[in-house]
Length: 304
Image (cartoon, rainbow, N blue to C red):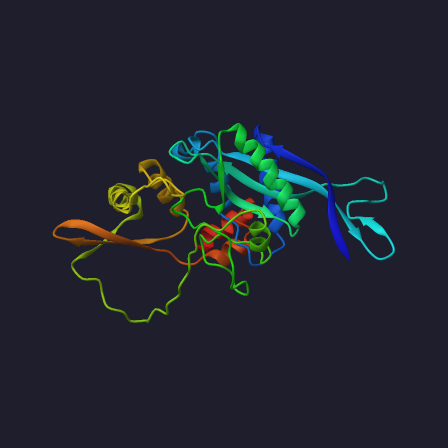
């Protein structure tokens, strides 16, 4: 049985009700995939509330999703998936993304955060075309996807290892999405994730390492993160601008949702590097559907 979609309609969330509708439609696209670990639903919706986060407020997020009617074709007949006894056709979400601009970008680059799409090249192509039309109105001349809400968070389409749930903070997509995106977009970078087995009895931290309470994370790590970003440089060809204080603060605020340990390395009496350790709670996030409902958030709080 083959399927196709028709009667497309794109929506841009403008009101509080439309924003809730977007998140509902966005989550419905991957909600039946057991390997997908949704981001924390409540924190995500809070961060995207206008003026809640200075970093995201300047990026003017636009919540866009597309709906269509599914039609399945067999050898003998054509069936509309949403056709019931009443004869009403029901639309379903087929694509969704958060369109982000960035006033710091020198190349007028926009980003598509949390891009979700069904397994249909024609649908994805139509959605990208809709996004391009909206992008031109905003002065955007280049789109990158899939990305997180910050360049400090993982970006990109997952290419392999689909037999295991990706770890926390990793963007997830079904196996077919990279191939579909490659029909309309060009790859710009590649990243790899490595694993290491941790022994039960490792060396203790020396005098050069200090522990930092999570409450002091932004104050302690913010200047160090900015210094590291400045050393990496920010040339005209960069896909993402170097993180500034507002983006770094957003990043650390996002990480605080989960338990963590922070270690800072010091040399010559000055901070020189740091590492943030967090448990991989992606399976718990998947089981609780990102904590969308109150009882799921309560269970996640207990699990953490």
